[in-house]
Image 1 (cartoon, rainbow, N blue to C red):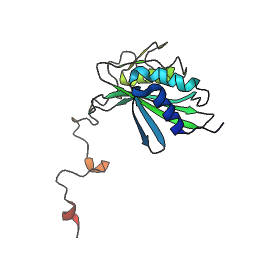
Image 2 (image 1 turned 120 degrees about the vertical axis):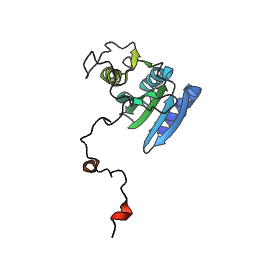
Image 3 (image 1 turned 90 degrees about the horizontal axis):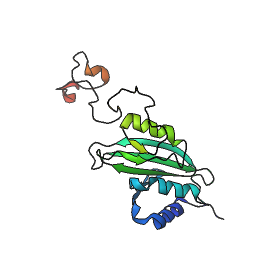
Image 4 (image 1 turned 45 degrees about the vertical axis):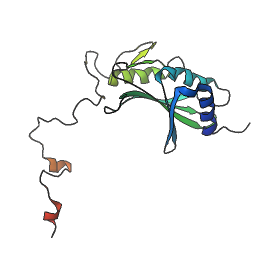
Amino acid sequence: MEKPTLENVLAELQQHFGSNILAVEQDYDFHTVHISKQHIVTMLRYLYDHDTFRFQYLTTACGLHYPDAERPFGMMYQVHSLTTNLRLRFKAFTTASDLEFDTLTTVFPAANWMEREAFDFFGFHFKGHPNLKRILNVEDMDYHPLRKEYPIEDATRYDKDDTLFGRRPAGYDRKRLQP
C-alpha cells in the first residue's frame, strides 16, 4: 500500500468526525486541527488504532493561555506516526469557568506527566487522571505561574536602569543623537 499523506489523514478525520473539527490550519510544516475538547480522546484514539496511520507517539501535551481570546485556555497535543513519519498538532480551547479536560492517559500513558505539568502550571483538571497532583511546584502554591495574569516586570522596582536592558529611556529621540 502507498504511504499515506497528511491530506489523506485530514480527509479521513473530516469524513469520520465532521463538525467536531472546528478548523484546520498549517503553521510552517505543521498541520493543526482545532477540535472541541470533548472529542480529544476519541479522535486521538481513532488515530492511534487506525491500521494505516498509527499515530502512536505523543510528543507533546501542554497548556496554552491567550488572555485576550474568547476562549483563552487550551491544550495542545502533538502526535507522531513512526511508521509513516507524519506529525499532527491538535488544539482544544475552553473558558476560565470550564478548565476540565478528559485525560489522555487511557491512550498514551506518557500523557500522565504532561497533564500533571498542565495542571501544575495552568490549573487544568483532567477527568480520570490516575494521579493528578503538582509535579514541579510546591503543593500549597495557590496560583498557576504560566497563566498570563501577572505583569512581566515588577512595577515597584526603582533600581532598574532600562538602558542596561536594551530599552530606550522615556523621551529618547534618535534624530537628536545623529550628527
